[in-house]
Each structure stands twice: as structure tokens, then as C-alpha cells.
Image (cartoon, rainbow, N blue to C red; front, side):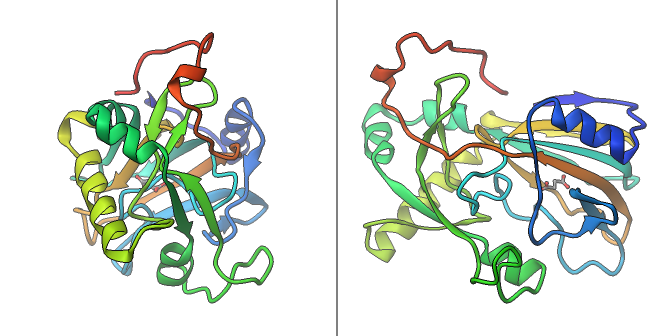
Length: 248
Ligand code: SIN
């Protein structure tokens, strides 16, 4: 993650910053800004019944090619609370035993947009093509395309089950992985000020927006960068791939 204070960016400047990381992603369900379909409005006030980011998640992992980076800038922050908590999925993966790493690395998970599309935005179908909620399969452990490091890639917001497992096995394994991934030693908690900007890498970080400030207002804008199809490559195949510092 990267954090910047005192960034008074227009939406054009926000998008231009995002484009330095790649092509911008257009969220099919979240409220976009007039004239700026690539900008998602993040807003909570006294009439809110839900918030974006209430569950631990990586952004839009129901897409076949989920966003790589997300860039959030808040303009209005509550007097108290409203932090975002990030967790390193590199650290979570690396803290698993060798046996558990081997076990989960061969698995595939199913990610669905139903919780976000239906439960948060009240949609009955995918606005991109009218063909139901988006569903994608991704490896439970994904290899970061830039660093070659392995990261856990299942999340409470989008992952519905693990493929080829009985439902109770899948539920038990996901619950174990979620509990493990949320350990405080993998986390960083960011406290917002007006005009703070956070940049995070969805390929190796999960996040959670803490809603502890009702009925206060929290308002800002998010731009996300189009990512690639997640893949898993065993570590022995990583020769020559640079290792970088863990996101902490
Ligand atoms: C999100 O999930 O992108 C929103 C995070 C936040 O509001 O802190």
C-alpha cells in the first residue's frame, strides 16, 4: 500500500494518477460519477444501511480479470473512526505450514458478485450483459505477476466456495483461511484525514472499511486499475522472478 496526505485532486487528476498504473476499470454496479464512469463514489451518511467494503475483500474479484490497484481518496471523514484495515495476503500465505501451503495451492475457488450486486446495489442481473451476477474461478493461491510471490486469494466479500469440495469441507476451509488471513500481525490500519489518498494492490492485499462512525458522513472517490487473469505458478518455476519487500 501507499498512502499520501493532503492531496486535493480533481476527478480528472485522480483518474490521471490511476492511469499511471494501467487502464482504468469500470465497475459495473457501484455508483459512478456523472461524466466519470471510471470513478466509484464511496459515500456513507445517516441514511446508509450498508457501506462499501463492509466485508473483508479484494476489489471485484468476481471479475475474470479483477482490478490490480485501487486508489481511494476521501474528502469528508468522520470525526472519529472510519479507518480502513489492510491485510497482507503474502504474509498470510507465508505464515501457513508447508503442508497447508501445498494443499491450498492446488485448489480453485469460485467468486461471485451476488453479495455486492444483489445485496448492496439491489441488482438482479449483471448490468454489463444482463446475464446474471458475474462469477469467476480463481486459484486459491495466486502468483503475483510482478513479484512472483504467492498470495492467498480468497475473500469473504466474493468467494462463495472451493471447487471440487463438499460444501461442508469448502465452508470449513474458507472459514479457516479467513480467520487466518485476519490475524493482526498481517494488518495495517490506516486513519483517514480529509484529502488522504490510499493506493493498494488487490493482488496481494485484502481490506475492510470499518463502519464505526454512524451517523457521521464519510465521502470520497475510488479509481481502480484493470488487472490480469489470476494464475498460480509453483515457486520452483519462479527462477529469475525478482522478490520484493512484503506489503505490510
Ligand atoms: C472499498 O472497499 O474500496 C472501500 C474502502 C473504504 O471505504 O475504506
